[in-house]
Amino acid sequence: GIQVEQSPPDLILQEGANSTLRCNFSDSVNNLQWFHQNPWGQLINLFYIPSGTKQNGRLSATTVATERYSLLYISSSQTTDSGVYFCAVAPGDTDKLIFGTGTRLQVFP
Amino acid sequence: DVKVTQSSRYLVKRTGEKVFLECVQDMDHENMFWYRQDPGLGLRLIYFSYDVKMKEKGDIPEGYSVSREKKERFSLILESASTNQTSMYLCASSFRNTGELFFGEGSRLTVL
Image (spheres, rainbow over the protein chains, first blue to last red):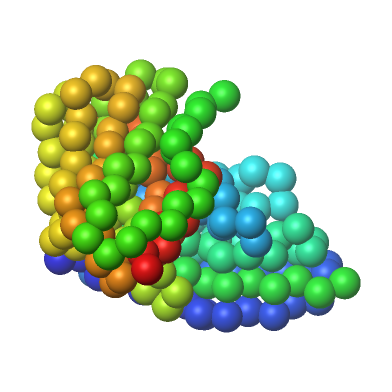
């Protein structure tokens, strides 16, 4: 099956810093999404981005489908950005989303 | 707002018991999913349903079954719970093809 790798596995930042999270996948996909899991366990959808670039406030994402990777940018990080960021992809003509193992982000004041 | 509601936040069951986890969504989504989340392993897909009475196995279906009798409801069944099924279970739903996924709050199951 498709492999989804996220890097780095852990990231520690001071408030105000910028960061880039990466998601590599091993096959062509029709669906790619980024999620944030807060410290209480709730998963929130950040972006639905099978290709192209999107921005939402301090967050933006870019997917280069032909090269099989996606990037999530966090600018001017805040302590509330802490948590785990997951990338999920659906290969081919299926809607079955497969998750990467995540990037754990800690932002300190 | 999309709402995905899971019936229980915390459950404690004994080995061998039959366990039902219920999930209801209110957005008329075609797709519904059950994942489990374990430390170091991320989210793993157990079962997926793309329509009423339709289901597909995910990556780890062994020991589980599902039921989708109505579009808004997707149930996960553990026929005979075992300690290795202690985990956080997450339900999610989406429209077909557009696929933006929405999650419930999760059900933390402990099997003793």
